[in-house]
Image (cartoon, rainbow, N blue to C red; front, top):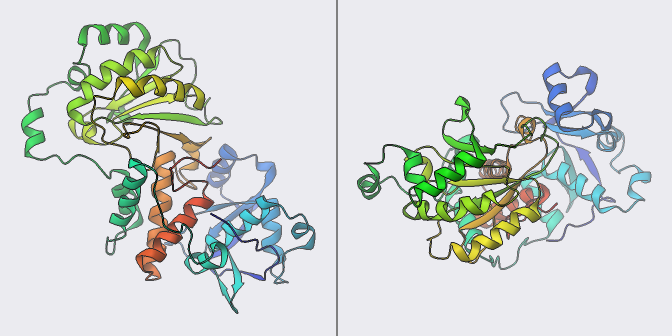
Length: 388
């Protein structure tokens, strides 16, 4: 995907946002920003003018705030910035245009948001849209599915995208699993003696009533906390067999996760949770450790049927293994710009869909706009990996 250089174009401030300087922010807003960014680099926030708007707060760094203030008196960006010819500045200005904070002049009119897609990316973003693997196809199908919702709120769209490809809780599933009394007994039934021995020896159950929809374990020698990892990228390995192959997949996966550098893992804590695609998730501090254990799992899981987790980066040929990355500070980030990896992706898609719907875009135009929003959020819509 190519972004046109727009630094020498004409701009103006959009009517949907206002710039609010640090000193007039609420204490809550300051705390959110401080938890995610070095406040010395932050001027304030771009805040939607309409209180009930579906638009979100955006952090305003010093250079971008200067641009916004400068455009009150000029339609051109400051010369000392445009003379730098830096891609990072160009991409930052593009984000402001797509997010409707700024408008760029195109074919005689000032445009932003959905109407700026062609001005920035050209007439077609992705050409023939050939998707490379099963999960990429699945993710694109999820977007096409969500485009057909009528009058749906953004949060509902995001939730539907997040749970897309969940196995239906139909009569067959009920018949097969109505005797399951204890989820742990079912999940570890592939080799119960050895698996419970590994759990008792190496892993400690996480008791968190707020997350009782998951069964989670940390290593017994685990010294970190969610707050101590708030400034780190956390890499997530998704193991996604169909529910009937889950016990077998767990009997293969747990010994390998235990011998790896995974510091935590979790499984769904109900039949409904195990019908979801993201039914097993393991956590790593670095991508190389994740890929190392995934490489070992590839061959061993070949006899398990894949369900596949949309909006994650596929690792194996079938889609039973994939990965994502929670950005640093994602707990506080959720209140400003989206949460964990898949939440971030589905929230961005849902926001783009609501904008596209409000502008009555055709599906092809909407998909291009969604792609532009995701690209600018550092998400690769071909393989659903983080761009950075």
